[in-house]
Picture 1 (cartoon, rainbow, N blue to C red):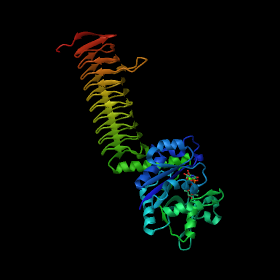
Picture 2: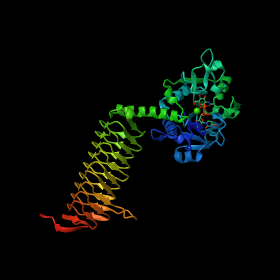
Picture 3: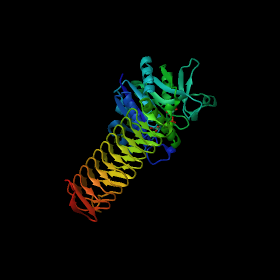
Length: 450
Ligand code: UD1
Ligand code: CA
């Protein structure tokens, strides 16, 4: 059975009180609309149409080639919204799933059950419902004495008796495609809002003696729609719990899941321990046997096996195996840290390669630097990489010893095994195996024994 997805995302999201289109607000680091597209992928939809309206250009720019777009100029209701996708999808698939870009918590397995039910029963419509004491302003499911679904009534249009009904419409359906595309323009403005209600198709199918099937979703939290920032925070919380649980079940220790913030898509190796108040964001991969945190933020970075990163801030960095960092070290974009490196408190590295086994113990800025292996950087060393106009490179050979408080005025090269005295201001290249001291540092002698 071939499947198309229609994802509704044209509404304004007024209650979010936002300039950003609602569906671009992130949950666990990913825009809500992307979850809807992931879901369509997981359902193996042959076609995916996103109905956009408010903030259309921004949504289109974010989504790119992941969907086809149907533009709904005026938000005349959910039925009208789905109708906008008809030209894109009619005749292309057997069934059509309707979902929303503001329901990031829906799970593919739940929708798969609905799709399977539509297929196995040949129903014209299969849909998801929940039973809940909190109505969440959802439509009510009307069933007859035999328990057959008869229709859906929006909360605002309910009689007092209908308001008591606890079975609610999730708004997610699987339609027989031909029937849907043929009936959509029969919808009439409906209810107090005089909108084209997609929900009216249920009563229409029933009137045609067609089968309508409903599945009651057990965990209603899946069906939370994000209409306000309060619901956005709820969705974030639930998503975070899911992500954390998945990591723990995969062999990662989270000392305190309640204060561990791991975004969607982050990968963590087995036996790694994540300490409290740690944030792992974006495209981040952490190896096995690491200890990360407490109080660490890592964005879009890779960390090799066996690293310890205590109270650090990393962005767009690559860290090899068995590196020890922190407390209070910072890696900025382009930092590449070799194996067994140590970076202590207030070490900052930007756009630099640090060779294996090098130590940057305390209070240093290393920028635009190519550093060899087993280098020792004394406390307070600064690469003066910016001359006011441009960035210049520093090259430091293997086994160099930089004395405390050295200023390396780039562009400058320090030969292998060279040393600088404390407080040296290095403005000229230092040859291999040489000791340089002073301000500006001059070479005073060849090191003995070389
Ligand atoms: C809809 C259902 C309701 C269900 C609820 C579940 C209808 C008439 N009602 O109500 O039974 O309980 O979802 O969440 O379908 N949208 C458009 N274009 C439009 C109108 C809406 O793209 O013209 C999009 C909105 O961006 C939103 C979604 O469709 O994401 C739902 O629309 P909304 O008006 O919020 O419907 P509900 O009142 O939530
Ligand atoms: Ca809604």
